[in-house]
Image (cartoon, rainbow, N blue to C red; front, side):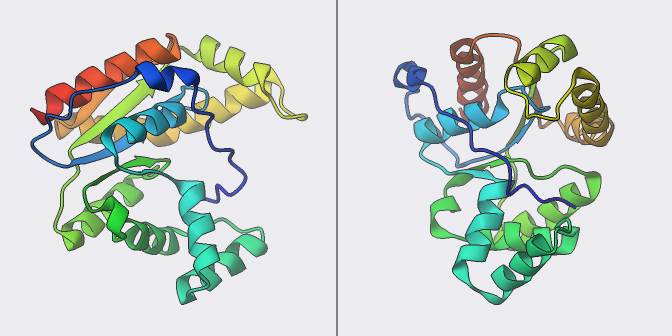
Length: 214
């Protein structure tokens, strides 16, 4: 269950101008981005989206878009969010299904923030099967905990402390590790060292996507 409407979209840095890749892909690109808070996966998803010409889709963006449509699904999401409750897995799956069925995602997508649990992994598998497509790669942007804490403290919210941030990271690891192992066993997981500059990480991601699509 999740509710990411309060999450800020990543700021795409100026280095995007130097992040380019020859368009020699032979298949469409469908990627899940994994990574703990502060790893920079959102920024990398935005950069890669510009290069590949496929949308970077965050959980928050999907929820906001669903609400803005005013559809039956959007009204259901608005009611849940308005009550302060977390969006349940079945409703979240409906939101993801609707978003991935849109025209701009037909040639590929970068999912940022979904799935987060094994149950959501199974839901995504069913959605992609319904759409007649398959997930091609899972990119796990990771970094040492000390660096994640340093980054979080540098931009922390008013009530954040090192202990709060550390607890948040611990909970994330507990929830995400099964996903990492699941995708590793399926041979879909690629890990990127996020303890580097944005440009260096972008180069590593570019290499993985180029290698994986030839």
